[in-house]
Length: 233
Image 1 (cartoon, rainbow, N blue to C red):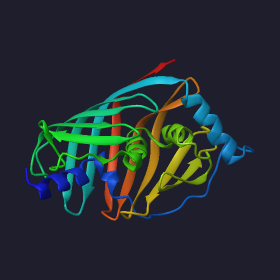
Image 2: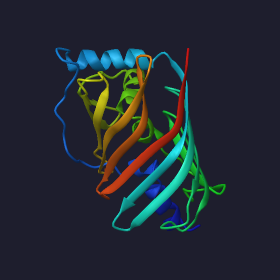
Image 3: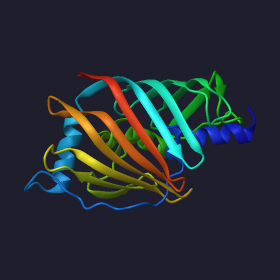
């Protein structure tokens, strides 16, 4: 794999697309009827804090004018800790197919295709900014709030933290984040996310279908879970 191929793969993989965050659209903060948006987000953060582990299995699709990428994947996530994605990438747009593995923590992110690092130099992606974007793509806006708290940042409808700007829109019906926006100034890029369908698990909302758009690639992202389960502390 050449350096150019490795960089292209790292950009176009459904999870690693978030490396290229740029400004997109904005949202009007919402919440439960009569509930202050900041208070609602703090409540969500407290509820997700009791989760020890999430495990899921599903499919992901990324598509833009250059083509389409499809993969079946398994995901495990320990809030505040490791996010791991093991996927089977179908032949298509990228210069490889087969096994893909992405491992991300709040400090670093690495990705492999058929055991070969996707960054030819062997260095890691910038995990401190990529990690919350990957969490939002795979699980939605609710699960980014714990990262904000761990960074010592204010949990609010609009907030800057760790070199990123966040916006969260809480749905009045469910009391959970329905849409979210993440923007990174350098390198320019953004991710617009939308929780299309979820299912309640106690006070939590586990994602079933998430969609999003990566700017400036204007690449649409679709993530669907066949199975998803949570383990509480």
